[in-house]
Length: 130
Image (cartoon, rainbow, N blue to C red; front, side):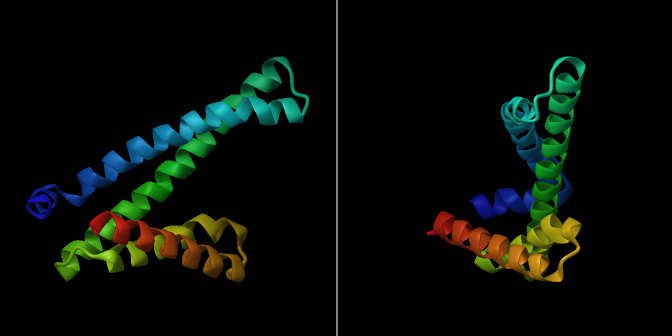
């Protein structure tokens, strides 16, 4: 029954939903970690508020971006293959992991992060379906 319901929802709707949910979680994480980082840097007043605000936006945006890429890739692959299995999450995790590490401009880190996120995504999807 779950398969029929997911096939009825467009990938774009699933992607927007995941961006909003995970992006909000990232913003909350930024709200928690921002003041601690500002304290470590001895920031006070307007500089502290600015730093915390930027942390909230940056972490929320990054989390939402990764979630959006993962969800859209997984959904697209699932629709293309016509199967809902761990391979979809494995490929989508690799793409999302490569996106996370792309900012480092280190090919080694891109490959490592793609493999790590890919493995975790496949394991989570496999445990969810079994």
